[in-house]
Length: 103
Image 1: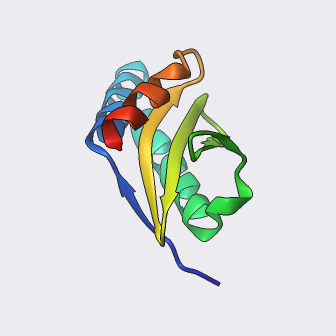
Image 2: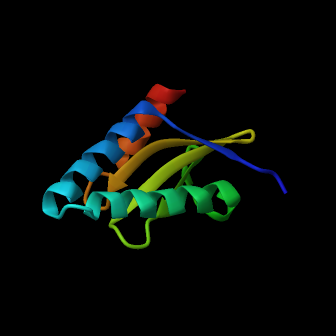
């Protein structure tokens, strides 16, 4: 079985930072809980990225279990590239715009 390495693009890192800060402002410690859930999602993705349905243009989506966020990622060889971590209420076309910049 292939082991995948996961990397995150800077815009996805900014998504995570913004979500962390918002959750921390709601309740101290909640941001850390969000990061723990995101880390678990990243591990699930790295363990089997092909089990997630391809949406369009090679992008796949994994939903967080506890928080209303989705991780949008591409598989490039043995690397998983996270292009966005978006709240469910955000325009899903955002990952398409970012993917265009990534190519």
